[in-house]
Amino acid sequence: MDLEVVFTELGQFGKYQTLQYALLAIPLLASAFEEISYMFTSSEVDYRCLVPECEEANTTEFSPPWLSLAVPYRGDPLQPAWCERYGVSLAINTTAQICPPEMFMTNVTQTCNQWVFESKEKTIATEFELFCEENIWQRTMVGTINNLGLITNYIIVCYLSDRFGRKSALITLTFVQGLLAILQSFSPSYSIFVLLEYLVCFCSTFNSAFILAIEMVGGEKRMFANCMMNTLYSMGEVVVALIMWWVQDFRVLLRFVGAIKLVNILYLWLVSESVHWYLTMEYYEQVVSVVKNIARINKKQLSEATQHTLDNLVAKREKIKKAEVKVPTRSVIRELFSSRPLLSRFAICSLTWSVNVFVYFGFSLLSVTLAGNKYVNFILIALVEIPAYAVMWVGMEFFNIGRKTALAGTFFLTAVPCFIYLFVPSDADTIRLCLFLLGKFSITISYTVIYEVGAEVFPTELRQSMVGLCCAVGCIAGLFAPQIPLMALYINPMLVFFWLSVGAGSLSLLLPETQGRSLPDTIMQAVKLS
Image 1 (cartoon, rainbow, N blue to C red):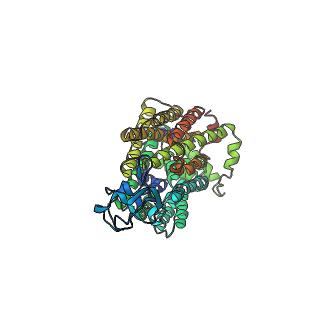
Image 2: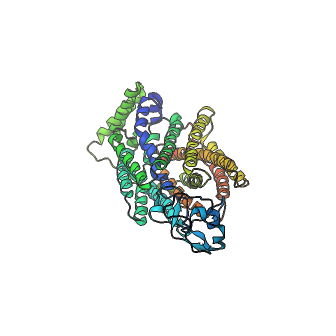
Image 3: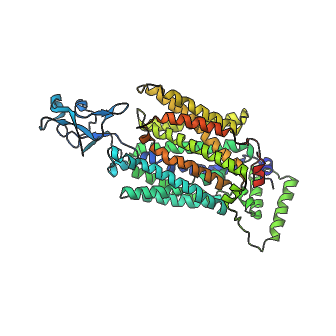
């Protein structure tokens, strides 16, 4: 049975799909929470050494007039050193008003164990005292553990979703993840926090929600649906930043995340299971029920040919009614290596996915290090994704730009601002931010197209497993993305982004074009795409 024909008859994105996407809207928005919340829960806060000769321990002034005399400035742009201060030649108590320059010895530095903070923001850095350069790795490790959880999710959970259904996986993961996020907010130590970070990300819901949603629409509307889903993801990024900006406490942020996840359970059971999955698993009665439900809600009539096909499905199901329906037991790895076209696609998708993950999250991570308000910068970097989705959809829908062309072209476009950035002065904050926005704009299109390509070049019976494996390999690069602040001490990250984008763009040209082609349900159909 060709479900693409059915969707063409009943409406590729009608009232039925609109209702289903409305139910999936909050879960898709909230799926961003677990993937990017670590950028705020483990972010650095601005702090400096306390100078007890000139101020009290409860001081609220971060940059007094005498600060440059008492504390060395580091970095580009220059900022007060975190854990160093100048020595003093006069051991006297004084105040900020009478703190003479001659009391400081600028040729002598010493470490400190008391600090002054620019804001009241609470992250794991302040909660677990992860201060000074030697503890940076503990903060960045949270992001690496986050991506490690996503890798195991893509391998294990996505496989289970292929076996037991997209809807079942989505509901179960949402519930468990909500509980774990709330539990994480009560972490008494750094080690417990990191362990729960892994478990929360292991229960990531994005792939289950994405595959379920993409299989509800016809081929001509899949890119539009893709844009809608990723727009919701970007809005989720903005919501996380706004919540943290408001509450200024990572524990409260995690409780918000957990509560929103648990509220989703109240209505997620109303979402329909994927008709593609029902057909692949030979649940023919459910296939007929869903198809008739789509026809009823979209107010469409089934053609005689389609009705005859449905009747045949029911008849076929009656013949095996007394027998237990067997779940396909083929090994994903065996199927992959038995087909050279699928193996080639897997390799290319995995490599380009790796670059997408590294560069996409790299821009987001670096945005909070730019000059200015880190929340505003992050929100701008997130919001620029929305016009990127719109441009992608318009280009493919109305200008007939192919998936492969879009993927390769946006990789090359990403390389351009990365290259220009290398020659921009460090004090040109506005120009740097604009180049960041352009880079994030183009890599966002690429990151979205790769999901679409991954969903279209693999068959239904292996789709979520293959997409999950590609995501897993891609997230290996994601393990290193949180270490970009450390990498920046040795090499400019924008130079790395430039060369990776050029390489990935070249590889993308080797993929088959899938625009306007039916979603393959079998391995044979997928191979014929070549």
